[in-house]
Length: 436
Ligand code: CMC
Image (cartoon, rainbow, N blue to C red; front, side, top):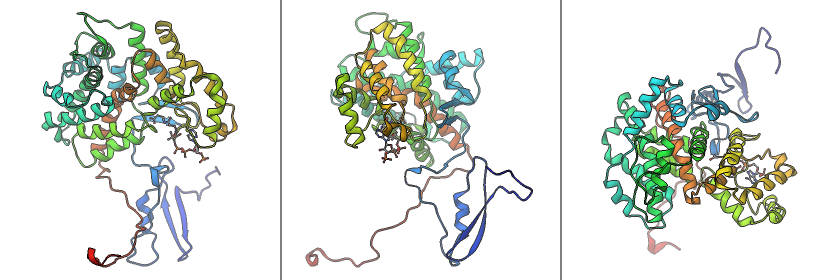
């Protein structure tokens, strides 16, 4: 970039060649311009003014946020300024949840209080069980989770007070506390097993594992290595700035709908195979490849665009996803306990070959968070349908922090993009008898 001389200004000069008119547009922090500043560019008085066209929001900043920082080129991820590597190594999930929601790491006293609040809110209304009963035995766990989190909206009508800070906090704690319970109940429904209620003396992840796996014993204590591994995975998934599901949370939240229905929208967005459903898709893909010798043939199909290498590529990361590196290390610890997942060999070889192929190198396609997470989840006994659910539980924290930021941001209002209409012009209605 050229040195700023005396005449340098933080503005952009634009000439409209249709009119020969020059405009000056302010450049704001983060190298952005306000899209509304384009409106002054007009051919005639009375014109609407210029807009920018950005399907899929690939180059549109929709908010100023202080939650998560990503440098996709360098593979950096930080929550509230703290590197993800340090948080994954040294913090617990609820400590990170507090950090994300309250902006600062908690003191011991603050953390104890937060854990107590979340624990207090782990139970769900018994009528939720009737909602669950309505689902078929083979209903996908993510569909059940989306529906049951939306149902919480009807149990907590006070959640509509989105302008009341105290009410918002209560809903936040409720959602963080109840999501694992709903997720575990979805799993038990699928298995046809009786529901196991939360146990308050267990940690967030141990309680979740207890609700999933306890059968026929009074006390269930998960292996501490697996409990910690799940905690680390939850930390890695807690937030990821303005992705598809977070943007959904903000868009639904911008109409001042309550946070439970907004969370249902976010979970629906997460469910798709291009987003949080990718971990499930990776496992299915590895299963289809089946053995290391079939990898080259599969990658040929990827290069011919007949297949997509699930768990690779990212809109923001053009380097190795830092979460994927941590997950790879966590996998080794989990496999010490569970024995190695045979799909790991296929995944490692797939990564090795792909990272040396021009197709992937030229497009900066590296493993993302979903490439190895499913292999760990499977080794820990989760069926593939639970993988996106395991993403949704911790991401609930991020969605809620982003929702809080949205609601308290004076610049935000109801989200409403524009369009360029390309349909037919006005025409007259033709009665059905006269239509050709
Ligand atoms: N396999 C093969 N080719 C790919 C892949 C992939 N996984 N990802 C991107 N490409 C190609 C794409 O075909 C395009 O090629 P060309 O320039 O020849 O048309 C080029 O790379 C650019 O891709 P894009 O589709 O424009 O990139 P995007 O930013 O729109 O998509 C993505 C990002 C994550 C949707 C995509 O990389 C993808 O579909 N990956 C597989 C699904 C996946 O793992 N998703 C999880 C993302 S991380 C966690 C999360 O967000 O939940």
